Image (cartoon, rainbow, N blue to C red; front, side):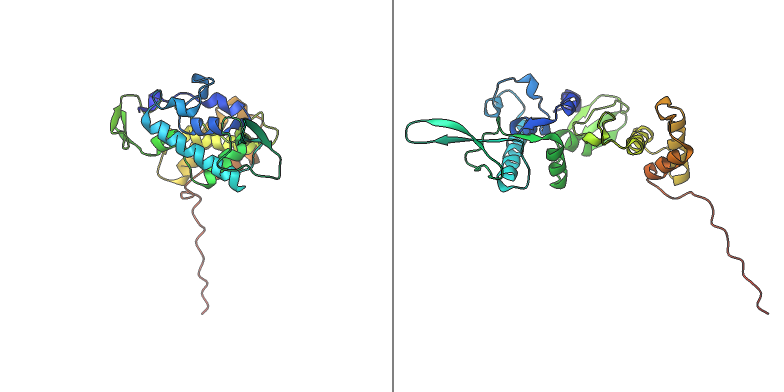
Length: 249
């Protein structure tokens, strides 16, 4: 699977609640919108074997976390069978669904809660894994796990799936300075660090803030805080004032 073949899943950030099945597919780099009304088990011959395996593993992990009470749900459904028929039953909070009966395509969870849980488990998405194992080779990217050369420029911007909701400017709890710090850091590091010392890094961050009109409402003190937070190397600051030795004779 080549990096540029992965779908752009960024629009899914707009959907606050995902089903367990959708969450697993998205984390495996599969867009559920491309397969409407198709259950995961039926995707085995449609998507790549690697993505299908990951999606299946992710779905089981998510379902087990919900059933174990470590991942909260919005609503949960079970498939219940008796001697004569089977039917879907909603699980009322604070009860938890049974792992053998949970219905992944009906059980829903909050996007932010899922992403926080996935990060805590270090359950990286398929796209994150590909990006993390990518090595720059000239003007191409070498993907270790798939051993393929991707002939795309290294400065191509690739959208990742999981941007926290509080990084969305429209979110009511979004901190303006945190968003600006994140955007400034991404801008100055997308092609590698500008210099090898903290002073140059800070200058590059400040230049980015000053050259973009969306940050013009920030006060000087705010921009200084943003530069401090975004600077990953604190070296290169002001030279310490030398201590003066007094003559005690």
